[in-house]
Length: 283
Image (cartoon, rainbow, N blue to C red; front, side, top):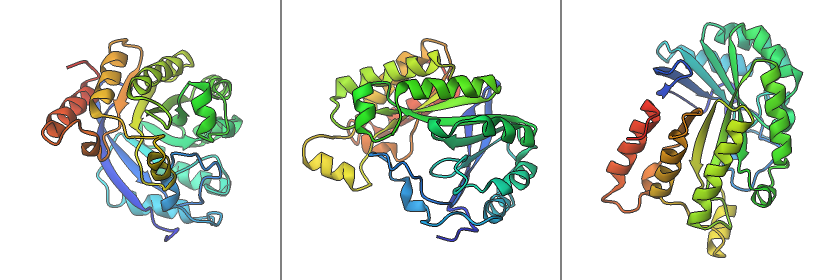
């Protein structure tokens, strides 16, 4: 991996906190591997084993922004934790802030246990609205423990309280059908997890169908402990939670065709989910 280049970048449309569709630049930063090693995660594929050298992250951001069109918001996703100093050197914060302060919202990823007053310090440097994306994954305590997330639902709630005190917005990632979960349990627990996230003050949730691809998930599938969810289950979760009108809920549609109930229904199912993502209304 070239630590002075992002491994990917793109622009996508998203229903924003301003209740309209706006463009978001997403920069996938190259940096040190996340130390938490969650069971279902495959993001380690695009990371390094060494601490990120100073100056690398600002150069990655420059490289991406020079090639992307102007957008209202930016995501600095780093396959781990923005406030891990070995992933994003703190010495680079002023240079990062200088590059992103013209955006309406700056969105970063972080583990709940690494949320502290430094989040507010970075928001002040950016002079714009910071949003921190946290991996809740599930509010089901036993499942959360099996995922090796190294946190509890109480830890998640405390992180949300701390971020809200610093006027930082919160996004949560919720998994659909983790290992050792039936299709029905997957739906029910995803819905319950989104409800819990909103109760903690989360502004929006992204629902991610659990997939194979990291080795461990294949082993669990071979043992009969995991099978990917159906796209119809994702649609049920989205329809139910959008009907609450409590916050934004997005279906993660990356490579979504693999979850389609059948090849013939894939295009129609994905189109419906895309429409609900962009309108935040039940179609």
